[in-house]
Image 1: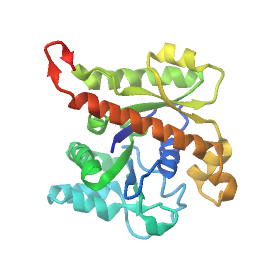
Image 2: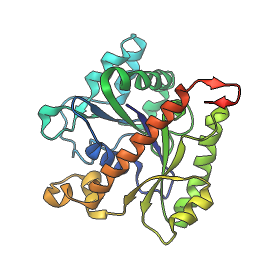
Image 3: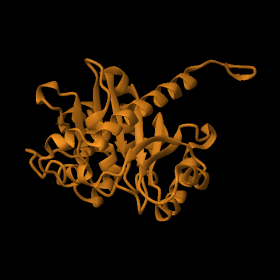
Image 4: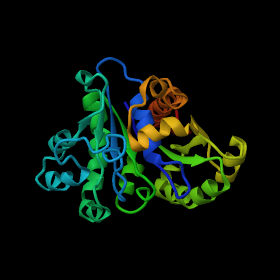
Length: 270
């Protein structure tokens, strides 16, 4: 199992939209689960957008602050999850809704590292891949603990000059965060929009493309605003390619885990 963090920058295509497409298409063998954790300090978007507010109860990342203080973070996490599976009886695609107001982020300063540790252990003990939506600001500040502990960190970027320029400082911050580990787990989730080819974006940002998603405004609108997408949404290019992107990110995370677990000999990792 794996922990994948997604981060963005101004001018980006919407990290949450990409993360939600991945969750709904994530490859799940029998008995496995996938969790999308909205950890953007600026607030969550899925409940008001894709779910159109139709969620009973006060499910929110903010509620984990109290659970953490009481030493029951894992139990508290389960209590906040929303089932996005179809059919619902499967309960294998789960959502941790984000903050309802950016001011709530300050109260989670001490919880972010604990949550990062929990995700790292939970994806093994529960058999669950974790997608962490860091939004545009979660790659810095206290919430960056989630990026630091992830198996793979993907910066979501379009093939436009504005997106590429905006992504550079975010990437520099993530490289600095990686420290001595280098940035082997860092790369791009490229959205197929804009005049610049993949080679131009990778050369400018000095990062490889880990996975790709198409520019599909019609399907993306269902993810951002809700509504009945019907068969067209279920068969959309966005969801089809999100399934392939998920397989790619999953494999990369497994490879990263194997590298870190390999013994270190006199000549380095062997």
